[in-house]
Length: 232
Image (tube, rainbow, N blue to C red; front, side, top):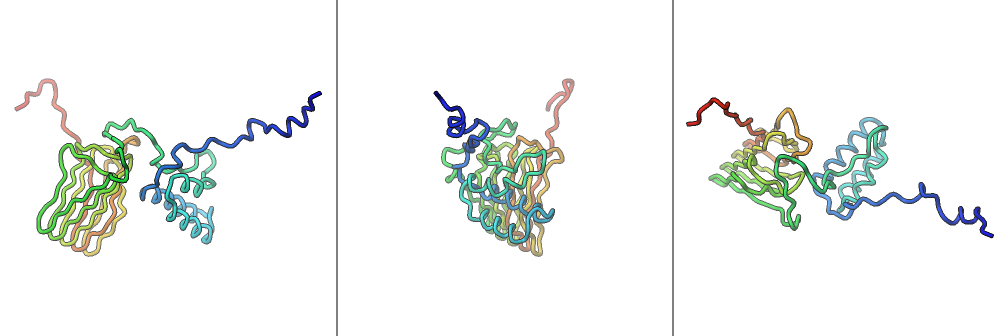
């Protein structure tokens, strides 16, 4: 005779089975992923959900994290009731954005450099915006026009350094710009469109403007011709 009490003790109930692991946990974490976790920790500290010591410990874990799987548990218990726990945006595997996004074959190679020293450097037209772009303007200028570009990631970062020079960054309509830079005897700013497309890429601008300027802005809406209007 089978003792159902023994079977029940041996076989765990279905609701007690461990949750399915995040399939993206093995992916390498980007600087943008870590920045998002840092923002969540900062908000938790300001609202009293974390103590100073807890915040310091988790911040250290965030800076040491190398994969998305290592980042996710750091903020898992900080979800507000009725909302899901914050998850690094890089875990998204696809996008329906009208702005073209094409994941690179090797994310580690998604890197670009634009230099304008006593001259100018530019990217324009149908070019590929790498996940990380370094832009340096020294007594010169750099122009990064992403209006018609293809993005190699859901989130890309531009490290802009303008020293006695200027860097202009133009993004397509609907793209969010995040400003993470500083200006010293210069200006550092970024402003996107009012209506942000949640499916569009995010451009984070980091760096320094020293006796120079770094500016990020969205492209102006393209004018549409009326049916009765003749082109010239």
